[in-house]
Image: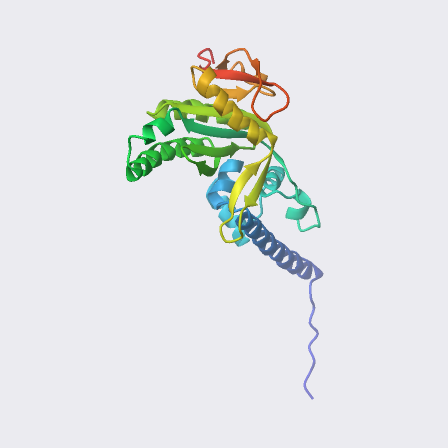
Length: 271
C-alpha cells in the first residue's frame, strides 16, 4: 500500500495567487472596455493620449491589459470616452453626455475667393499644406483634432489648463501658417459623438459651446485684427498670461443671448 503524503498549503500563497489572477483578469477586461469604447467613438490611442497629456504608450499598455490608468486620470478619461468612472471600473454606470473643454475652430480668410483661381488639384495641395500645419500645432499643445470642414479644423482641448493650451495653439498656428488664419475659441461643455451611417460614421463635437466657437470664428474674421477671438466667459483668469482686448457683447447668429467675446492679441510679455 502506497503512503499518502500530507501536503501543507500556505494560505498566504493562495491569497496572493487569487489576487494576482484577479488583478490580471480585471486589467484585461478594462483594456478591452477601453479599446471598444475608444473605437466606438472613432478615436485613436494618440487622441486619448493628447487629451490626457500623457505618452501614447501608456494608452497602449492600458488596452493590452499590462496596467491600469492612474487614479488621477480616471475622471478625464471618463469624460473623453463619454462614460462614468464607475463604467471604467466595470460597474453599471451610465454613459456621460458631456465634458468640459475648449473648442477650437480655424478657417482661412478669403479661402473661397482664392479657390476661384485654382484648379481642384491645386486646392487640395494648398489645403493639405496649411491644414497639416494647424493640426501639428494643435497636437503639440495636446489638442485633439476631430474633423476638417473645408478650409477649417475642428478640435478640442481638455484636461488641465485646456483654455490656456488652446490659446497658445491659436497664437502659434497664426504665426506658422502663411495664410491669414482665423481662430474662434469657446470654453464650456461639449458632447463627443459618432455621427453618420454606421459604415461611414466619424467623431464629431456637438453642443452650444461648439456652435459658439464656430460663430466666434466668423466674428473674428471681420472684427478682430489679430484674427483670434474667444468667448470670454470663464477665461478672465488668463489675462495675466495673454493680452486680451476688453470683451464686448456680440449678437451671434443662431445664439439667443449676446456672447461676451475677447480678441486675443498675443502673449503677455510681462510673464
